[in-house]
Image 1 (tube, rainbow, N blue to C red):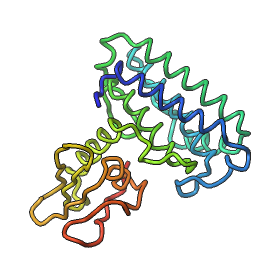
Image 2 (tube, rainbow, N blue to C red; image 1 turned 30 degrees about the horizontal axis):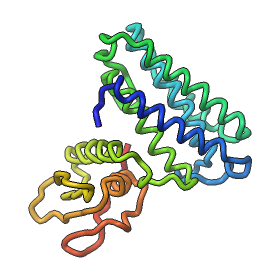
Image 3 (cartoon, one colour; image 1 turned 45 degrees about the horizontal axis):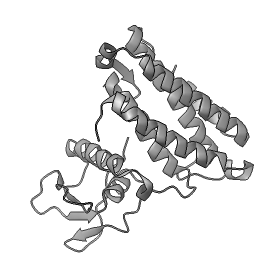
Length: 239
């Protein structure tokens, strides 16, 4: 998958439609039910996705204008907004998600070509503005799974799953707390990915989506195979 923001906007639109379809099917009891994220209900996840879109709009505006606009006012304010919005009625969640998706699309459309090369400050450090559309797509797809409504990693578009796997494996390669691994995607003729020293490292094989989901803590990895036979290694905590 490309990281070209203009080519990824269609992927974000499609992921947004899928999320909105899921959100539209939630009643009040479903919104307050637990998500896959410890301590968070589905309402927390939905509110996070809405406020995350607003945060990306802030960063796109910073890239376009040159003003030092933070993604969130503060971590405490971000957390308070998520907590305050979590228990809203389903219709309010849905309307909020639609509004923030429209704002994000408008902010992307307003970006001049040269602004995509600007550096902005995310919660995780500096990013090129060109990565923000990929960042939003990743939030949509991963947290859709976190809603625990039946949308699974296997439902991710194949190109997204491959890109996420490569990104996560590349990030682990530079971490001293990551176990040595050789990852073999089972989707077609895909190259193996190496984390750490491959000498003696276990070979973990399976669909790209399942490999990525396991590495980011969204799957137990029970459909993956390990060679030589043994338990799956324990990946470090993802972002």
